[in-house]
Image (tube, rainbow, N blue to C red):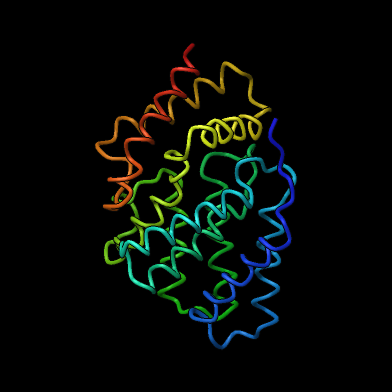
Length: 235
């Protein structure tokens, strides 16, 4: 059984430095102590003991995937910063027993309130909030109209959040187990039905990913992983 083990101190410090660098760009006039307090709050949320998949490990994977896509020039420097900040907030509120969409809306509201308090510009806050709410169904095309002008940012964030589908086999199996642990309160039959519906929907999409790099390097492996999990669920 996997556990939500505390992240090494060196890794947490690296995450803190990354956050502070992004906020220095997006909120240069915010007092340092407020930016530090915010990242400490965020890491505390991501480290809550009830989390199994939606943990610091997932946060790190999303940020790493954003950086990989940015290195492939899938988006510019500003978009990268916004996608990374959205990564910090997209699961900051997480209760596996909450109603569908509730976690995402709570996280988006928290992002708006906290970023406003830090002095991030309204336009940037709007983009981050919309990226977070997009994770309800991972539908870029159905997002707010103003995201159309940030389509590269949305594509990068979308793909980074779904990177896990394309992860190496051992990591994918661990991820699937972590999700089941988070939903341990759901009876096995109902869990299989719900999980099957979510995964089957992904496979009906013409493409899982929106960036060129992800389509070239992640798409095939993701479809293999999802299909294999569906086979296990239906066995």
